[in-house]
Image (cartoon, rainbow, N blue to C red; front, side, top):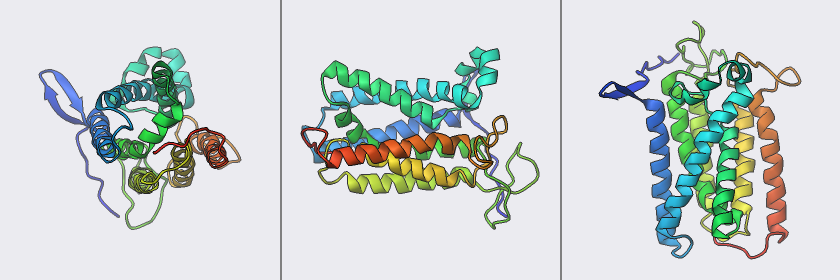
Length: 266
């Protein structure tokens, strides 16, 4: 069994204001995504301007914060949200839902694409390979917070998490860091090096993330306030990942059948 490295969730203070590692991880994820997308622009000039990239990241971050927090409240903590709606602003305590954040980002980028009169998939195909970088840092933030721990296990790398009882558990945050972060980034970065039909990169992202999240949920402890939501074993994360995979497959099929006009360099 490995020892969980107890890390103070507060990284430092600016005067009386605490700065949490969780928030710093979001900033690190945004910065790493910006660096990666900048490198893509240098390799494929004319795809988007530097100003457009800044706008895309701004819209995406706003959509992520609003959608992620609102999604968590609706999908995972609806009862508390109804009785104390102000807790939606307490993001330093954690509680961000990826599926809600994804919807928020898509809506925000739809507004951006509509404003600029460009195809939404041109934007999402461009940024999709960078999203796993943000996911990787987010899972590190979960690990530091000692939240979203795994199920009880006897594997040699199990850990005893604070507030999770005395039993050793899967470090499922690290599983997600590797699968949804490092591995997904590598696959999408390699795939997007070549030209594909419009929507292909976005569809592959949805399919792969959904499959990886569905798989890792077998090792992650279901949320206490929800438990299993279907069939006696399916978690809310798995339930939300099913439509992601289905939509991803549909987009890939449409893309390679030429349903989206004008192939783009993604």
